[in-house]
Amino acid sequence: MVLLDYIINLSIFSLMVSTPLVLRSFINYKPLKECRYGVSLYAGLVSVILVMLSFQQQGYSYDIRYAPVILVFAYLGPIAGIITGVFALLARLFTSGNWYPAIIGWSFIMVGLTILHFYIARLSPIKKSLILYATYLLIYVVTVPILFHVFPHKPLFHLQYLLFVMLGVAIGSLLIESYLKLYRIINENKKMEETLASSESKYRLIAENTSDLILVLDKENSVIYFSPSHEFVLGYERLELEDSNVCKLIHPDDAKSFRENMMHLLHNRESITMEYRLQHQKGHWIEFESRCMPVAGEKSIEHIVLISRDISERKKSEELLLQSEKLSIVGELAAGVAHEIRNPLTTIKGFVQLYKSENQSFKYNDLILSELERIESITSGLLSLGKPQAIQLNRLNLKVIMEETLELLSPQAHMNGIQFEAHYEDDSFYIDGEKNQLKQVFLNILKNAMEAMKDGGIIKVNLRNDGEGNCIASVHDQGCGIPEELLPRLGEPFYSLKEKGTGLGLMICNRIIKQHHGLISYKSKVNEGTLIEIHLPLTS
Image 1 (cartoon, helix red, strand yellow):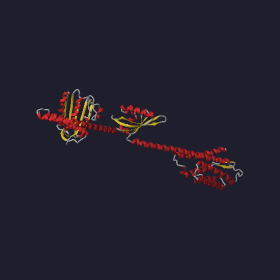
Image 2: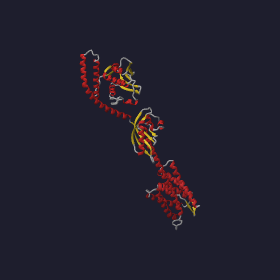
Image 3: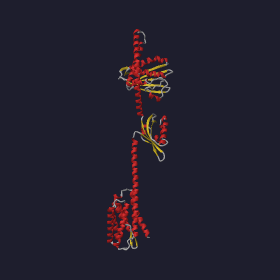
Image 4: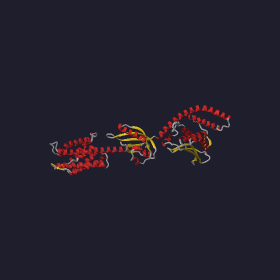
């Protein structure tokens, strides 16, 4: 029965220690020292309950009311310990007599524990508990025989009682330490989760608000995550991107190299940079540069992170720079060639003028001189490529220039089975321009149209007003046509679709029209023909 009483007391004590500790873990945890007085009061009530659960053996009362007192001293300090001790004393006085010796014994214990605590303040709570319990044991062994006159000849009397109290202190310390360790683990995990959530939130904030495209792929190149910038740059809806394989959006010419780069990355586990084209939702292609980084799992690469940037504008700038370099070379070359042509041209012109003065009846005199002057103007234009000069603008009727150009080319067109079909919306289309330069543009474009029509046909020439203050001069042939993907390159230096072409004709035309504040557009279909439109501002 005595053993059962011990077990009951220790079990109830364990329950009363552990219950508030566990509840605080889930409700509102605060460190013990921040609520020391509340804990000391609760420990005092536990002491009272333990006194009420005391049992008798050999005429003496046994309880472990000092176990919570020692624990409070160890974990919360002397003041809290004395508060708990007062509850233990009052319970003792209420349940039995001998008040005077009980008060003296309690005072010795409180003073001894308080003084000792200041010397062991830096030790851990468990060590404090052991030392405080040893102090309590010493005071108990010395004072009880004197105060209560029991077993004065046996210094280790009540040994089972002291072991009983020791078990209570040990169990309480283990429970409290377990709780504190559990809290530390929970708190560390919570902090890690908060840090992870904060980090994830920051990275997501960056990923979802950057203009760069952030893409996460698995080993099969399926999309795991994509930043919202994909929707803006590529034009696809979110569901379309989630259900797609990235390789399906890559340009066919770039798909093979993309896969090879991905295999290289997975095999060598190293970051790479590559360029490729992705198809916009509207069908056109966008140039991207991607930095690809592997994300390692436990055994192999699990994901691939691609940070991509639209480099279409950069590519255009590089092309413009290249074109500028070509133009510089063209300018130097053209200036050299024109300089060499001008000297014999001047001689020829002089002899033609002399011939004209002696043969006034020759009907082609004026035409020959006019064309020589145009050749001279062209050589001046070539010289201007090397050293651009401001053009002299005059008020001109574009219809007259077009008619003169058609008249000049009619014999050659007739020989090749080609007819000009001209339609003018009005009789006058006045612009500010340089006659010879504009005539050179029309001649170049019409000659290209004639050369594209090996089997003859009709070339439609049209002049109309677009209603917005511009004149549109269009030339539509029935030739072989130009592939759509080659149209953007028309007008580049040294780029020509003709076997013996130099690529300078359309380049000079583009430059002349640009100097006249206009623009040239090209439309073509293979085997159907080409439409070239020249937009020039009309004078008011």
